Length: 312
Image (cartoon, rainbow, N blue to C red):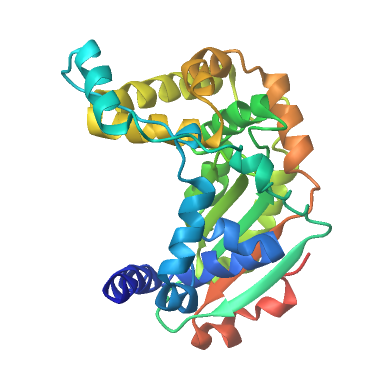
């Protein structure tokens, strides 16, 4: 057990070695507050190093039951043989006499009440890094919104889209990506930007301008919407090509929502309209509470002076 504690903690340290880790970790604290540990999947050093056998047993006895499990067998196999062999291996595994999520209910994520801006410093970053996040839809309360979120991010990230042109083509930023992570509890919407250090203030102003027009009738064309949908279709086909990867994808969707969510994904995604996308922006992004974090090298502070403009 002690050896494994060291191994897992080493994985954490490797993740920490990425200069951007400090920004994403600070964002999780600001975004999720008391629910931080639920979103921080890597854990923390103290818990990892001091985890005990009794704690592992407690977790196992709460969740590791056949009525809370999914077994996926994929590849060139015989259907009936699989069921026979699975029965031989797992047939005597007795189900729990309870539903773990009824017995141990998961609390809701506390909504953001106001926007929160913060600046952190890291000696290993060579350019400023900007991250803006909103609490987005989840699969329990707004499953249609999760499809719409995926489509909107795909549209915005197209190289010929308005956001890319406004920030990259003008030299205000070196990189900009809008992403949404499908979750059962408050999926985050994230806008990650690598600003031009010489135009930091102008970059932030343009980002805010773009967010204000995300829901404009002409923010994207019909062709851009069609391309985004086609891109999503191709991505799903690629994910299904490798069996070893596909089983991980299926298990993710089963845990996050349901297998039906996955099997109906493309049809639901293709039904997304321009109006759906505009309503999504208005419900989750535009004029909504958000967290914004800026990671800079300590030597940049004097020249950038973020306190003068980086605020709600």
